[in-house]
Length: 233
Image (cartoon, rainbow, N blue to C red; front, side):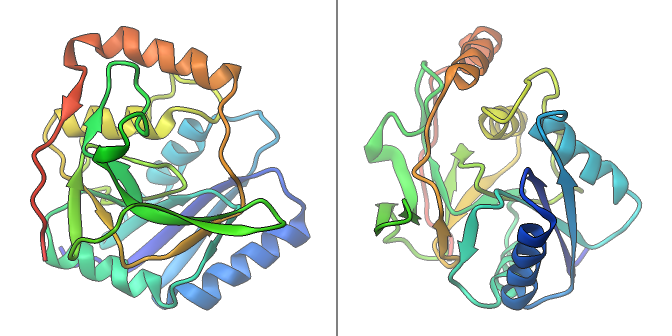
């Protein structure tokens, strides 16, 4: 079924005014039919819970793609939604991101092997801005095993697993989600046609490490996970 609409989903601890500004930014850049599903969340819900709630809310509607994002990003690319819908309608991928890897090490850290990373994201710390280019010199879409959670586009009709609500908080939801779907046959890719600025440098914490160790203990028999990569136009 042709995909015609995007459900942009995010969790927010910000003020109503900040959320309105972010929603306006989405509306001004997406360039396609869409709805925004945002949840005020002061640590009472995990991201896994928020994202699954969105999937359930729209479960009866056809022609959807979900985009799960952080609310500290800025879309550089105009009409990025049109680009994304075209990717899903023309190619058989179930999950698409802007940064990821073709190899997941035994330690569960997707950025551990730089030579297997791909995609590009701009970052800012508020004072300066820089481009983190993990390998974006490819055509169209590059198949991967894991994508970064700052931008995750999902076809709800073809994924096999929802987000794992056994993982609490705001970390490792993306690794677990991609991993579980990939090993059961879903196709994941990175696009280099959607440019994003992330207003964060990205840090790990104790919660991240707890979830990482939990993930490893559950999936040790499948690690490391790798992919022989072919480019798709």
